[in-house]
Structures are given as structure tokens and as C-alpha cells.
Image (tube, rainbow, N blue to C red):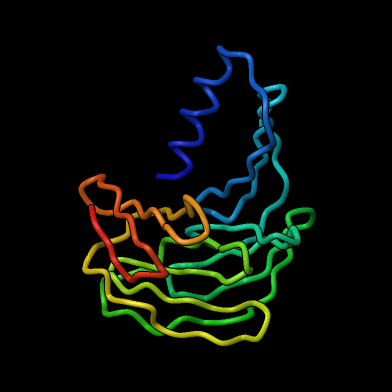
Length: 170
């Protein structure tokens, strides 16, 4: 789905003048691409040979990826190499991990179809369950600011979760 959205974005942006930073995205087959907003070009970067469901950059420029089993990798976008750094808890049959983001403190957040939001701290390797949000994440999460996380949920709804107050709403 992310690949389709990125391709649609690429096609739409081709008709407009583009400015801003480049965007890196992955396809479902492990390939990484860079979309330049400055000249509206799409460049193949590398093949990770991993079926990643989401990727996220930290504040130091390190790229992370997650697969459906909750395996979290450090990725090298130049040559496609990867290193497994952590595995989130197993999900019930039929569920998969599909969402990954990172905050300003380089803490990764992962979520899937089961509704549980997990964290992994890249600095001290601590991890755990944050909350059962009672939603199905369907593919992306992003921080609006340092406290508020937007999650794309089933039914194409946006779910807002405040990690400081532990409050969520659609």
C-alpha cells in the first residue's frame, strides 16, 4: 500500500514544482528508493532482500526497518545490508507488524494488526508494551510533535495517541 501511495505521490508531484527534503521509502520486496522533492526524480538505492513493512530514520541518520514478524533491523540504504537488532513479541496467528516510527529521543515505536503499541529504545535496548490501543494499525505512524503520535488505522481512520497522557482518539 505504501508503494502505491508513493507512486501516486510521485505521479502527482511530477506536474508541480517540488521543493523540500528527499523522501526514502521501501516497497514490499525490500527495495529502497529515494524520491527527490527538489527535482521530482525517483532513484533506486538498494535491495535489502527483506520484506519490510515500514522504515524510519533516527536523528543521527540511521535507517531502521521492521518486517511482519516484528524483527527490527538497522539498514544500510547504500548497499542494502542489514543487521537484526531486536524482535518484538510474537503476534497472534493472522496478525503482522506493519508500522514503525521513531521519536526525537531515538526510541522506536512498532505496531501491527493486534492493536498493541511497543517501544524499543535504541540507546539502552530497553523495550516493552506501551498500550493496547484497541485499533488495527494498517501501515504507518508519524509524530505530530514530541508527544502526539498519528496512526493510520483500519477504515482509513487516523488515530491520535498522546504518549505523555496515554490518551487516544479517532
